[in-house]
Image (tube, rainbow, N blue to C red; front, side, top):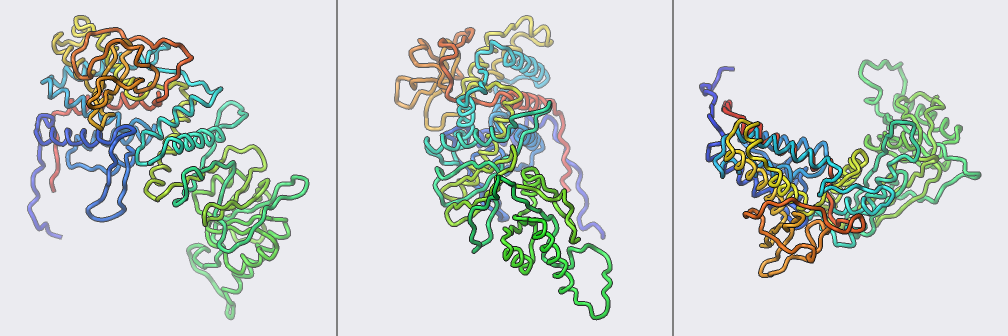
Length: 561
């Protein structure tokens, strides 16, 4: 086909970070992200102009996935943060806010890109080294012998998602359920490598949040109109079950591709139904009590199985197939042959029905120790329920990360302000500038841009005209409400009390350089708000490294065709 319009040349932009178009878009992105950061962040109502589902969220995974830009460097920043969220589930907004602030700091202080990347990389190394030290003042060790630390970490993650719309008691209840589900997926015994189990989530809207619960085993939908009472066998003998992955609806399409030869006078529908009934007879003879299928089961076969007291569950879906095989030990049958191999059968201890509003579900209990559990989440409407489901999944992932590195960082902005004060105190202008090949003035400006970016992330937690302060003792973050002369009774993480801090200073203003200490009180005082150590450490690395990549870009070449 001939070209209708002449092909235009690619557009080459020199020094893209100096263009007003990019700076305006970066500033707008920063405002958008900061506005929904933290427990009191503003929600975002996302709608595509070409149609589709409308989403109300404050979760970084949903928010960042919905943002698109025509500028390549902005897409680079968004893709980098999305990748972090995909791997670590938390601190996505923190990474994006710090990255944007680092880029804006370069332009605000008129720094050279090449010099700044070296300074940023050097300061990032100082932060990582300090955070990995045992005596780090903004890091706490998690105690797995008690559930309190896990509860605080889980509640901190959940409360940072304001679109969930949870009350204080509801947040505590859901936090307890997430920790309970997480512990159920950790095996009690292990031979070397530990393999965590699976938490399945069943969402039910229209019910109170406090009706949410966690159950060991799996819950599956019961057929409409099927009356059921608890089933268990005498002498604690497990119930036998069989699971089919192929359709048992009798469709010819399920037999595969190719040519089907039919003898004259043969009735295909009758022959296939006979074959299906043979499968049912074999299941009855083998003592099967639960008959499940990933797809559809023919009504005649269902009626036959029901008449013999067998529970029939169809349309299980592909997402439940692997958990069912792990829980029951069954092997999915993918054939219509009448002989079901003995090793294909699985077993469950007890089955019982559970009622959630108008929804009835079959509860399958494991016959042996299992790391499969089901969380039933309830909420008042679908929008809040969807956000709660995502938040619970992210929270469980954060708890799993804590198994590898049993630490947490102080939340509420205290880690950011503490790190900024530490970097300012560690600043050796003469030695570092010589090592990096820049002047002392350039190095100090780079330090100021880096520390201001951390401070701006802490200040982004305020959304109601409050002021952000830093105490000059331990460098924690404090909130000063509007028209009030006294700070809140405790800092952002809750570890320090007001009477422990004789002096404060407003964030992003000049304050005396000091060495931030650790709060007195030892292990008796526990922070109320925690952040994931692994996720936040990686988020900081992603923010700095992405900013450095953007600063290193000299040309942007775009094909406009």
